[in-house]
Length: 267
Image (tube, rainbow, N blue to C red; front, side, top):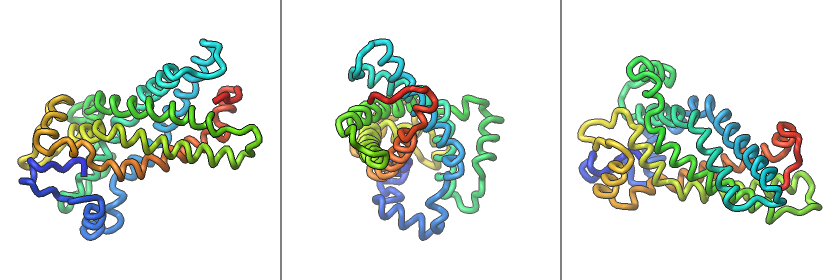
């Protein structure tokens, strides 16, 4: 939904809404079509989430030790999140690029290109830069998300924390807080995600709008489709990111951080 634009389709987008998109994909490609690009996600989502969570945890610990305070300031919460977001783009940029191309390939009849073949082609034609197209806008999205998500999780866990909670109760509270924080972060950064998708679309198709850079993409999307176009796919994205981050954060909070750093969580 984020890759389609009215200027390229003469005012008639391929998908009218989430449900129309879902139904159209199932009718034309079957349920397998809903999982295009899943291989790339399965391969790279684990290291991406590991980098995000571990870097944030280590930076929080660093700021807490450095300040000597029992509670992290909002500034340090945000800085730790920003650091985590900036590190994960090493994984997320090529992951998102390949995933987008695999999903768009479904619109070309008979196209059976795999993620591996696509990666080799990009490497042969453009080198490492080809796999990292859209790095800046990916950084803007991921850093902004982490600046919202991690402070919300930190403050939420502290607010709902109870010394009498057992492990299962703590798990459920973390799950709920991370779910809300993930949805909020995903919704807020959707404009960056839309712009990233447009920039990372390598083969935009006939009569498609060509985007030069981030400001140009923002300008053309608003001019051709209105401000609301910057929030295309917002609900599906929130619906995916919320449980994804909730599960990852909750599993991590069970005890991975303590075993890695040998410290007790204070937040």
